[in-house]
Image 1 (cartoon, rainbow, N blue to C red):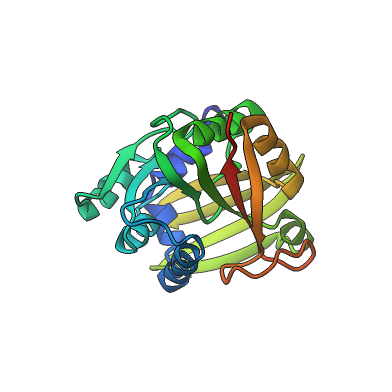
Image 2: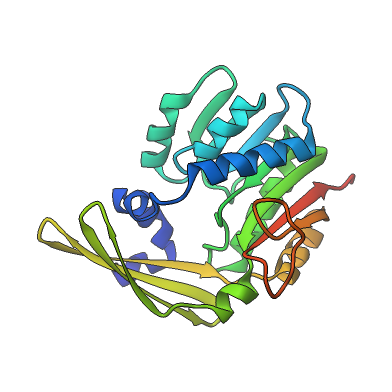
Length: 249
């Protein structure tokens, strides 16, 4: 990827079909089971409003909608939203939107940000702008669920180099941590053309999220460490799943 696109790697990579090819192994069954457990835990009212933040191609939005929620999915990728739009109905809608910007005010009962769809911005102001938009979009007492990786375990088990073959494409992947950012370099050849992409995700700890939430008026009310809603353990959990509630002004 050209250096001039360095700060916005996610705009070109997430809008690329190769992103979806590389990650096609992500389990829809696992995602659906996770949504089932979330909905059981919250027991939302019928037609409760839910925002799926950075919804990608909409698989979580579709599951949430099937569980009886009125779901809005937003994502920066026009290609992803174009794909997701085929699933729209009276209570499921998709929009191209930057999560750093407020979408609707005091509107949603729930906002979800799932499968590590945060930490892309290098400037902390952008992280805080996102959290501020999340908070302002929620009704008072509304709930925010963010699903991130457990940075301590990821850093302890960082695999510097590996290969993957998907749909006839040989992906070579190199990973490293640099200045608190996990950098994944992805290179491959398709139809005689060489491609290179990069992912840059901040290694954010629970303390980082606590600081963001305190600034924006969110309070942590629940922590989980996996998609079965098991307890969070700093050393051993694969995920850091946080439930935070919008506090009254």
